[in-house]
Image (cartoon, helix red, strand yellow):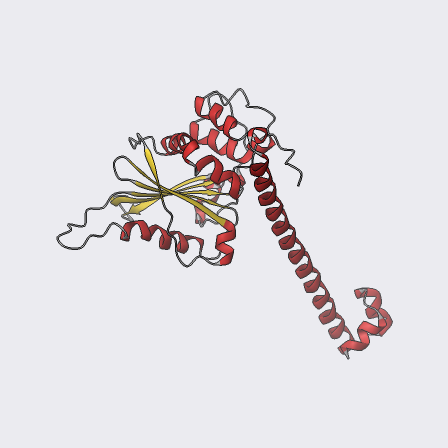
Length: 289
């Protein structure tokens, strides 16, 4: 199998995301990523936890990869890379966020004091939003932070559960040296595999480390083959979906023409006129009778 012609791995691939953020050798990258997203939290170190998600469908296993870790103060982070949107996307997020919360329960005289749980979603697509009259104001917003709040006052009911989503797939901006750290992460996650070298705008040490860890040429032959296989599987999936979409459109167009032709014939139009207007053949018209 030939190795990838890319200089750097795609961090939005299963293999690339796991390599860069889910391995002990690159734990410092995940640590700095979380520090950039949550500057208000004093994250000094993290420890990887075993992900114990249950009842994942085959489609979810194909489209979701997550890393679970805990910081020194007990805060649990679920960092999820999701390649495709799903029906009931937000319901699913709540369901899986409940697992690390329920898992903190203790038998006996437990007082219900919880450690915070932060869910980070790195999305290779654009979320659906219902901004109502504010749609134009927020149409370019790509970073979304959700908490439990009181409707009128905005008072936080409980700060122990937080969701933060990055719409990396919808990111189209360039970065400068003055860009914020979150925007720089968005840019590099979207564009890393397209780069030939580290842009000078990404001068922070963490990005120097990221580009070092993502260099395909530094991997073993087995690792390169694993990455190449992962990318081929992803391309096959995308091609299959695209073919199904095109086939569905073609089928819908054919059914639409048939219905129009059937109505034309019922109104008394000549077959020659119907064929000229719909593009259907005499045999196709005959099958409609």
